[in-house]
Length: 136
Image (cartoon, rainbow, N blue to C red):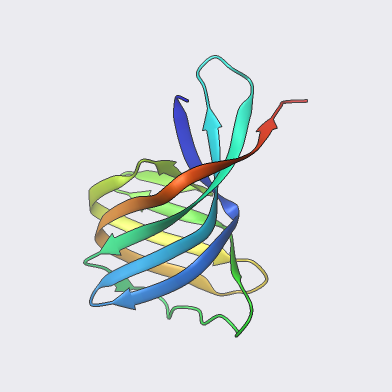
């Protein structure tokens, strides 16, 4: 595979935390689109992972999930210096400089909004295949 990225809309969140200037957004099921150069087909996978902003400050209070309800991302932006990734996160991602996170949560007006000095994406375990995506 030549490129991989997390598709934010529909990705399921496990936990959101902010401790000592570090924001962690844990994905229980991040949906990953993998593509190969020259191919019109793509594949869909899922994998657990964590988006981490360090030396961060919250720009809005963190949303508090209701007991028994899971959080689902409905898209948003990840800013890495001069780049803005809309509704996706490239894999791999690790950068220093001006970093920002502004994620929408499905079914609510709540957002996860913060900025920091470093951003990194830590993927866990092995990606699990879901399906081929073919252009119609």
